[in-house]
Image (tube, rainbow, N blue to C red; front, top):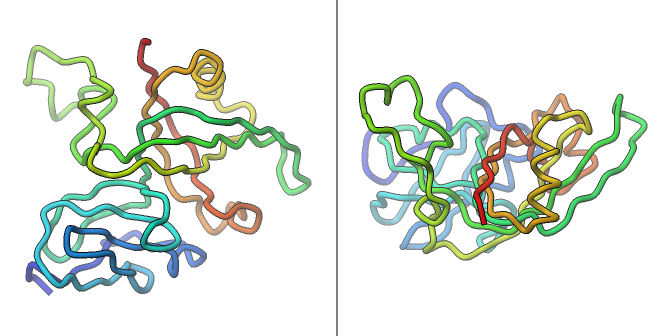
Length: 200
């Protein structure tokens, strides 16, 4: 493919079957549905930054991706900054423990935002503390995403604090795998992996 218009969302990772008809890429020139297990797409004009949306062209913004030739190298990661608007807990027969669902209103994070300095940044001292507003793709309108975690997930203690105290946060997760079965129960199943909370 190796041009500035054609590409695919993923490289070796396959998009879960339930999600293949629900992913849209938004650029300044429009919003376009991706196709297949690797999210094939063709843009009408080159774009440096792309917003991945769920469901339809105005659906929830899942993440921001930087243009790369051939593959955007997305691995199912969802990255949003905002607030927890609601928390629901339920017991389902198919699960070994209660499940917590978080409704987060927010905007996708910029592609280079990290919750902490990684090994590759070891020499870039002094290390900086993440700034909530600095990490948001604030040109993208706020949308609502739904996140799931089993009741014993350690991040849920932080989530409860964030809800009660109205704390700003970054949420990190990924589309639930087909094997989880969560897509049989939820419209947008994002498996929670981590949270970053910010002081008021």
